[in-house]
Image (cartoon, rainbow, N blue to C red; front, top):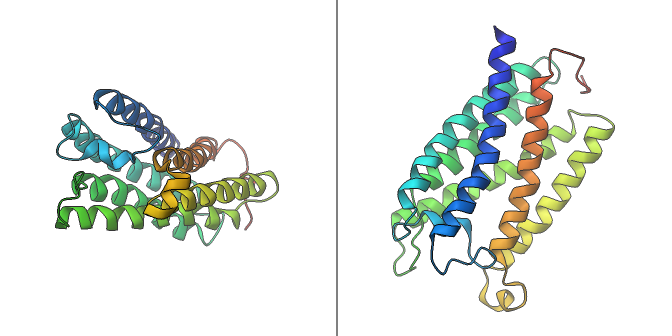
Length: 214
């Protein structure tokens, strides 16, 4: 029973990551004049967007799937390393902050006023991104050999593109690297690839000994 439950959690995590890109692609196609290279993903869920309700509903579903994934991760890995609990909490924070938090409190697309919704959206997005960045860093100390190298590549690449995304928000710098939509999607791709890797490890947690440090 536990094996099936954990496997379903791994599938939920993989589905959340895959569908996130599908929903984003569809929403972008439904928003006239939206530029995926220049505009952030948050724009797709703002109140004036034709996909506002779709994104809101999806964010709730995403949060549920990701929280389920987080609990599956904890149950699969908790016996192998003492810091797994910290990694589990980071997964929970990411799912709740990016799903319920940033999803329910939408951005002010017109930037005509600093609304509470806009402020909370930014706060939850920042909290979620911090949790996402820290997760593979924590996992680096859980794995060995090839998994550590892969984790290091994910962390390095993800941090580079997050930095580019943040820099592109500044007006002066944006004239040089004004592709915040592109940078955001690339760093999202890095970390979601890592989540898929974790989902794979969860799926086979009881079929062979995990290559993690004790």
